[in-house]
Amino acid sequence: MAAAEGPISKRHIVSDDASSRTAFALVSSVAPLYFLITLKQRLSLDNLHLGLVEVVLLLVLRFVINLNPVNAVRRAESVAGVVSQADQDEYDRSSVVPKARRLKRKPKSRKSAKSKGEHPVYTDAVIDKCLYSMLAIVDPKPLGELKEPKDDTPAPIPLDQWALVHDSERTKVMKHPSMPQLYAISSTFPELEVRKLWEVLIDAGNRVTWDGLCEKAETVEELGPRGVKADGKRQGSIAYLAMKGMFPVKAKDMCLLSIITRLPPTASTVPDSSDKPILRLMCATTSVEHKDRPEQSGYNRMKLAISGFVAEEDGHGGSRLIQITDLSGLGSWVPDKIIQLVTKNIIPKSLAKVGKLAETYEPKKERAALQGDDWLPPLLGSWDDPALAKEAQGADAGEIEADDSEGEEGEEEEEDDDDEELANMPASEARSLRELVVQLRTVTSRLSSLESGTKNEQSGWLQRIMPSNAAVHQSTGLAGVLSSSVFGGAVGAATVFALFMRMTRRRQ
Image 1 (tube, one colour):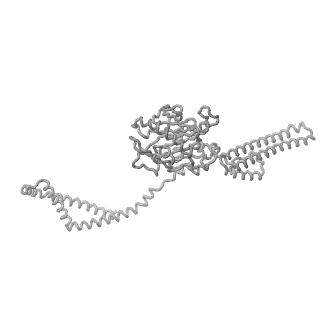
Image 2 (spheres, one colour):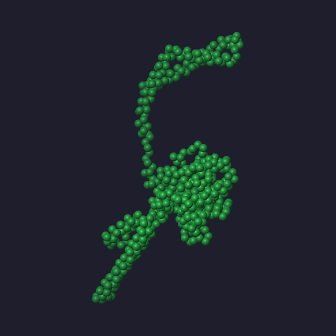
Image 3 (cartoon, one colour):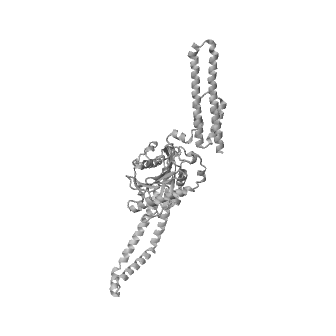
């Protein structure tokens, strides 16, 4: 401590000395004031020249003070003091750094406290809240598939209760009854498959092509697996959008968290449509912050509570698109004419461009390679319900236990080989084949129960009423039942094998 006090006290002395010299120079410059006033009267100097003389005297006195030998010694001491202080500071840092490192230990990874595969920032709770808010304003019926968020969410009001503000041949504009800045724009595409429409919408890079207000769009981060591995997992992405300005609204940008899912199938609401349940796909979005996309100059960061779209079949081979748009980020001061221009003109034209682009759109290679049901997003709630997850991705054949415990080892080896081949099959074909296997095993178990029941009956009351020489007829009856069971099992196995070979040839 004594060594540290020395340099610090010298530095204080140097600073005090500098201030005292400055004060002395000021006093010295004011001292000959009487002489200057007298000189002014004799030489007729004005105030401006008098001030200039004062400045010259101040500079001269300051220069003279710096030439004093005593001050030179003090300057040398001050330099030594500064050097000593630098050494002392270096010593202090070397002794403090280990302590600082101990204080700045990295916290434990948050992944250990979360479920496997959960994003450390955009957690499952954040994703589920986004989906919950979107369902509340579109279709509240499937809300039971999700856990209710702790934070506030919109009141459940379906689309059919929204106020209709515009209606044309293929476009409808609806307004939320309690959130005046929330709009729904619906467009129909009678000759467009829902998958083509979906492929265009989920690719953020296409936004610049069909949205006239979008200046830049790119995917920043992918959330969850893709393809056949997406079943039973939350799936989404983070996208960055830069929107053009429109007087009097300045250009805006935003980072959007987009979550895609498949809603439970329902009957079509289109008149004269088929009775087949329609496919409904939903994308829920909300604004978030991302470390790789901070706020940029020239743009105002826009905040969206909830938005997104729903793409569904219309029951006649076509599709329908419902765009949910939150205009609260533009500001409450925006004139109604701007709102009407966006909802009744700009967005409907953008949706029409989506349909035209989807007619000739070719998805990326990894998306185009998905066949059957593999291109579909995960079913809503399948990540929380193991039964739904297994149904979505096909239960592993190794987890299905055979009800007949008397199977031979050769048959078990054949089943293992079949399981490996089933694992390489598409999910839709594998599910169909496994359902047949389960049904056949159920029939086999029932035949076995009937066989055991027949044995019990004949070993009980039948032997008491039959003479001893009828044992041959009893054994013949048992053989007939056993032969029927074996024959039924053989027919079922042959059917499964034929179906499997047909699917294999079709896949090749």
